[in-house]
Image 1 (tube, one colour):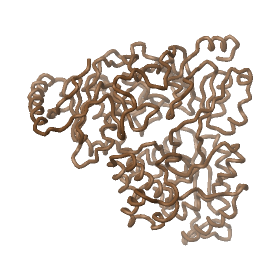
Image 2 (cartoon, helix red, strand yellow; image 1 turned 120 degrees about the horizontal axis):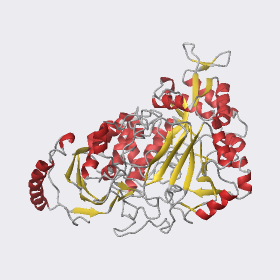
Image 3 (tube, helix red, strand yellow; image 1 turned 180 degrees about the vertical axis):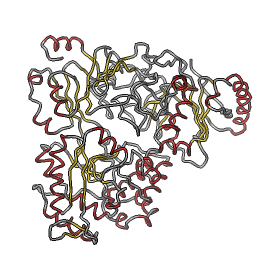
Image 4 (cartoon, helix red, strand yellow; image 1 turned 60 degrees about the vertical axis):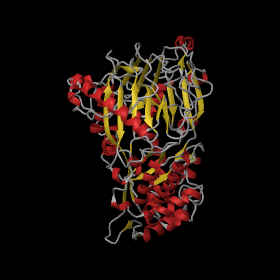
Length: 638
């Protein structure tokens, strides 16, 4: 049932969360009085209220209120079958929201839905999924979610507005600490106004951009289940709460296998955002100790879909019988998303990396040209920007609005950032060790107080050697990283390569117990409230900031980006941040791939034209039962 086209703001009636069900009737009586007061208040203020089926941070929504499906799906895709993927290592939890405890199983968030959801063909937009409409004033001082009345959890119980309030409070209090700290600053109150209406009021003096999107991304859990079980969101556990999503946990074998099955009673099967989606009956995840074992299992048909990330395997390994017999398809798919800002990352929490000259010198010892040509078959490109290939990447010398923003923080940055081209990765020769870069690195280390002794080792004034541990988890990286380690040794660094098992790596990475790792940051085509969590000084020890990066000029520009009212303003601010961070050299940019390498058994089909921002193999691909039967008949599948 659709809510009225316009809704007037209501006063907040706050009760402790544990008492809200018991005090429902009392609260309802008070609320009615608040509604009558709010009608009069709005009449006096003449504030325009916007009602919509979605929200866009910039511009208009691409889909109208009466859309019936997304443009890139096949609405007639058949339902059925199974797709099987792989994961490396192990898992000891099925709770993906305990970010600092345990190793959650892959796809363990799949049973849960968020109030609003983005599409794969838009940037900065989200549409009502668990809600019917949202309402907000032009000032965006608050937002009301008119929740759907037909949403049920997988245990058959209905979802209500109180579940959304509970979920917000649970995520705020027991989720990632940086998230909780942020929302406590920006959200003044949240209240279930009735069974299917939730109102968020934002704090005064806080930029409004991104706040509606933030609360719209709230996942919704069952309050009744948490109260009945006493479970906590931040604990490692296998028992999970019921979700409203299209898939539910079917079974698991700890550390070996997980199976999710499509909920036959999924409330949203006919929702416009679901049409053509969720076509597989089951999704299976097989775990393997290493990439070599996993690839051998794929060749024998133990799992059926693989996204390849090894250039060696892609270039030389795809000559097995299942491929030559045309049972397996190799597919190269372009993806328009921004590649993650990955590379050889230094932990800035360690004082030995305080000097930017040291960081630059260490980076000079990585030879992308030789690595790509010799070890990666020339298949990759070298990343330059934290927002590679997008309008958010800094290029050339700063100008226009970007320059104006840099000038506002001129006293906090190197003056050269106002006049020089953006930092790009160093160039290297065709030999593993580029001697020109070696000489430049030695000079930088000497300027920073590290001088080579008679034994060739770099030492400081106290005679201490410069040591460096590279922590890794993947055997497939050995051949890429070891030449870099050798080059660092030629520089005079006492460098060691330490590959540990997945459990050790998980523990050490969560506690920031490393000096250098191959890691990085996720980047998007739009930035907003999450930018501070990645690069802001207040969240320097957040799991989303693996380098522990912070800079006062970036802090100031983050505030600007979060408050930007247009795409152009946001983009100019991000470009300024990109320029500053690249000059700090805390990540040596490595490789990226503008396409995705896919291999799968020839029983899966997909839309001919994929959307720009997703592959969608688990979302809108489908299963061809006839082809699957043929593969089984010839023994291609286990």
